[in-house]
Every structure is written in C-alpha cells, then in structure tokens.
Image (cartoon, rainbow, N blue to C red):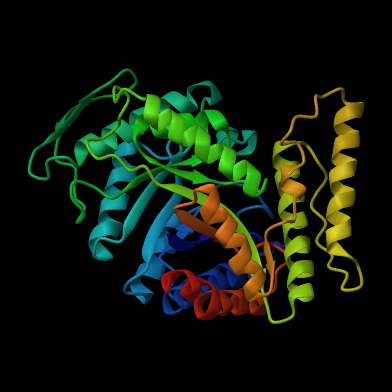
Length: 375
C-alpha cells in the first residue's frame, strides 16, 4: 500500500500576501513528506476558486518540489484536460519535461475542471468535457509510445499531422495515468480506460468499499476496447482526511473545523452557498458544528424540493483519520480492508494551521506509515 498527500492550496484570508505564504507552506509540507517516507505528493488544478483551491499551476508547484527532493513521486491530481484549459500537446510537453527533470517520478492524472467558474473563465464547453478528456488521454498515451517516431493523431475532435513531440518522458512507455473519480460513472470510465482511480470524497469507509466493488466489477467486465494506452494501471487511491497529534481531541477539532471550511468552499462553488466561514472559535465544538451543517444542508434540499440522495451529506462526515496515531492506524486498516491501494492524505485544509500540518506529517512518518511498512 502506498501513502501520499494531496494539495489544494486552500486558505482563509485569501489576500495576495497570505496566498504566497500558504503556497510556500505547501512546499515545506511536501519536502517534509519525503523525509517522513511518503510515496507521492499530488497537486490539484483549479482556476479562479478563491478560498477553495489556489493551486492553478500544479506543474510549477510540482517542479519546485521536484527540485527540492530526490525520491518522492510527483502527481498531477489532476491536469484539467479539456482543450481550452490545456491543449493535449502542451500537457504532454510539460508532463514529459517534469518527468525528465525529476528522474522519472511523475504520475499524470486527468480531470474535467467542471465548475462553471472555471469553464467560463477559460471558454470550455461543458458539454464536451468528457469527450475532450478521453481524447486528450488517448493522444498523450499515443504520443509517448514510440520515443523516436513523429507523432500524429486523427481523432473526432483534433487532427494533428506528423510532428516531433518533445521532450520524451523517462518512464517507458509513459508515466502512470490516472483520473479523478468523484462519481460512480467516472470510476467506471477509469476502469474502462485502463487507468488508475483517484477517489476524492469524504463519505467514509463504507462508500470506499462500495466504490472499490464498482471499480473491480468494471475491470472484470471491460473488453479492452476503450483502453487509452497499451499499459494498464488498475490502481485505486482513496482520500483520507487526517490530522494527527498527541492530543487526539485537539486533532479531531482541528480536522473537523478544516473539513467544515472545505465543505463550505465546495458548496459555495458547486451549490451556490455563502462565502465560507473563516473564523476559528477555539471554544466551539467543531464536530457538533459539522453535524449541524449537515442537518442544515438536508433542510435546504427539502425546501428546494431536491431529492436527498445517499451521498448528499457525505462532505459533512467527520469519521476520518482525526486523532492520535493509533486512531489513524485503525482508520487506515479499515481503508486497506475496503480495497485502497493508496492512501491520499488530505491535511492542508483552509483553517488548519501550518504547525498542525507539519506535526501530522511527522506523526504519519514516525508512527502510522511504519506500522504498515513493517507488516
């Protein structure tokens, strides 16, 4: 089982000065992650999502981290692949350059970048995002198959005459491919494409186990006709929100408060909620506030006559790896039983202070990861 971290560059007080500090803090966390034995650092790509994600240029962030590390893998989690975000030729060029300069440490994930804020900013057609992501994956994988041949592509959306696509990646035939999977349908697509699944959600163990069953079923039933590459990567990575401190109760409170900020930020951009609450009240019960937020969300759905589906309050679930190292070990053991091949630690959330992030990384490196490595 692999252990990794994922960065959103989320923040309260999103001034230019604080933004710069948070980005530097993320780099510090990524460097410590290598020292503590983590396998990969992943960085998202979002555009214009103030508070929620200021990681708009992950290729620069990952390159900066690569230059300051020597072993840890570097994951695009993910590149927004619709053409107006990133033309597939440019995505391939940048990814290969990072793979070369890092000594073959790159993982390349693909996603849609589907918020209306992002698509409208970059002129992306929302109705074409799935098709463009698939075509981008096919183009990039095809371009890297033969390092000495000219690349050409004749697809439904793009037609490219023979050109040299440079540089070529160090990993042969190409870096491992992944896809962001926030829905059951995208999980099935990842299986059909023969690429790894980055399962990004807060629903918890039971949902992870169900999604693993869906992924495995799709793998068993696929014919191979939709594979995007000659290399198949059936890898299932599951999100694990976590804060780990010696004081387990404090860790639980910091984690729940950070997750509430995360939930409010998502709701602001995906569900027309208010601006996220930035205040941190040390006397408040953050877990109880999350429960109240879930109840408020359900009441809103009822009032709007929107069906309350099973995952409607998943973002408010705080049963994660918050607490002591022993609590985190117990939770990860359950994730492992549910079928996770990789644990995607989400530590950097908007209200979580840097000292708590760094201490969490140390606790994972000194206590949690060795527990599983020693097995």
